[in-house]
Image (cartoon, rainbow, N blue to C red):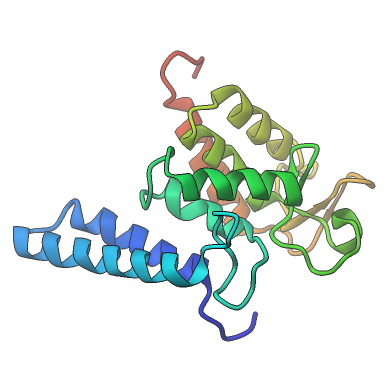
Length: 194
């Protein structure tokens, strides 16, 4: 990827600062880290919020990216924040098909012709839906993408939804890690079977 001011990088830094501030060893550090997170968020909002209200990839790139769904899930913003909801809605409409997700649009070709679905992004969608309190939809995303593993139970980076075949790096550790994280998160949901 190009050397740019990526919105997802800035937002995940702010999310990390908020999380570490919550366990700061003293009030001064908690305040310092929270203020830094607030500064990053304010700057990013001023420069990388699309006119439609959703986050865009970079200040000079109005496209969507699945990575923009993760910072709210990791504690940056609440589920009811308009930017969180707008980003999830726009992403769902433009970069998903049949409960499979694509990281971003490469060109004008149909998504499935440009590359395979990114399994990691499908699990991010499950977490984003869970964050919104839509547990049934979260489980749909999780199960669709969980089922896209090979015979050995391993995941690749991408999945060709037309040919039902794994594509890209195999095994893909990031996909496995996020699948386990998502499974544990969904298993803790009150009122649903574990």
